[in-house]
Amino acid sequence: MSTTDCSLQLIGVVRSPLRSLDDAPKQGDEGGAAAWLEIEDRFAGAVRGLAAGDAILVLTWLHQADRAVLEVHPRGDRTRPLTGVFATRSPDRPNPIGLHQVTVLGIDASGRLHVHPLEAIDGTPIVDIKPVLSRTADR
Amino acid sequence: MSTTDCSLQLIGVVRSPLRSLDDAPKQGDEGGAAAWLEIEDRFAGAVRGLAAGDAILVLTWLHQADRAVLEVHPRGDRTRPLTGVFATRSPDRPNPIGLHQVTVLGIDASGRLHVHPLEAIDGTPIVDIKPVLSRTADR
Image (cartoon, rainbow over all chains, first blue to last red; front, side, top):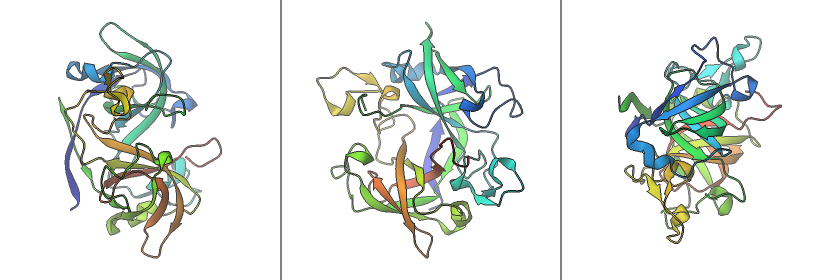
């Protein structure tokens, strides 16, 4: 078996002032923007319970990634040795799932989540949201 | 658009003494097992650079999950109010991607990664591996 039977469902989309990969930092804490997570209406129930101040992980589908890449020079620095993509955060990888830790700034009347800081560009598909685990929080 | 054009590729499989969901804890730090990550030969290059002691995130496809569930009683406790799955770590969710932080114990001659602690059951498909980010580590 080389492919699972799954197709990821789009649960929403990122709306961000970052319009292209040239605008985007490598990681959210290196200059990510405040952005909106527009969740599809049919998944509105899955958002219930999230609130301003929550630390969440946003899983995205990095739709501009090259899925054939197995090794990269870390952070594009060609003086550094080729390294397997599973040992890096390269977006180019067999399954280009992006993982972004952000804080919920607020939720508007239509259920959009305002979050910060997010390095994903405008239009990036969202595939999952999870709370950051802590010893005291609900799991 | 309700489905992206992606099919997740299986990059490997979990080999664990945990055989069923009844054996598995909710989170790895609640009694997860030492387990092996068997990576498919064609992705061997993507593992290069990982070493014993590394903290990694293993992304899995929770193949026994119910993708129609949008709200749950957290941790199955029916005295707690129904909560959107994006505010919980429920495996039942629209895209059942598991996220597991483990430490690499070692890598054997055939490239299998020995890791601990992992709550995913034997046979769980692996879809990605990422290093845990730190301020000092490579990204």
